[in-house]
Amino acid sequence: MGGKIKSWKKRWFVFDRLKRTFSYYVDKHETKLKGVIYFQAIEEVYYDHLRSATKSPNAALTFCVKTHDRLYYMVAPSAEAMRIWMDVIVTGAEGYTQFLN
Image (tube, rainbow, N blue to C red; front, side, top):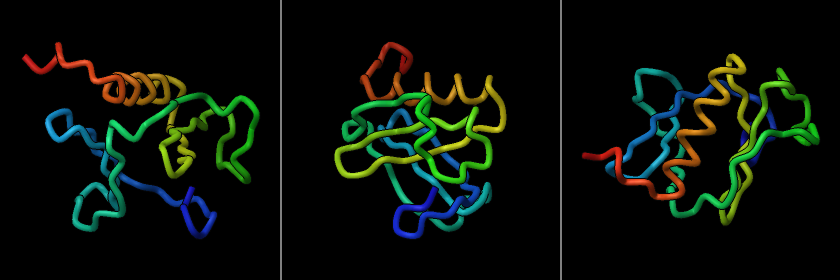
């Protein structure tokens, strides 16, 4: 869900362990960067069990990434994808580096 204008738009996310960032683009061609979430800014990653994301295209697949200055609402294409993305984001945010070797 958008930050300033609260509407739902598809975004292409790229997880970068080396840069310690989670970037998002308009599409999979990665030509227009829309924003960057730094791992150290992530406070929580959780399932939106309270259904607080208004007009979510799929409330059952909505999860949240809370940073110091923003709450990101995201919708995964499937339950499995949601679990994977949440795990990946949490792993990055907690600074696990054993996977870099």
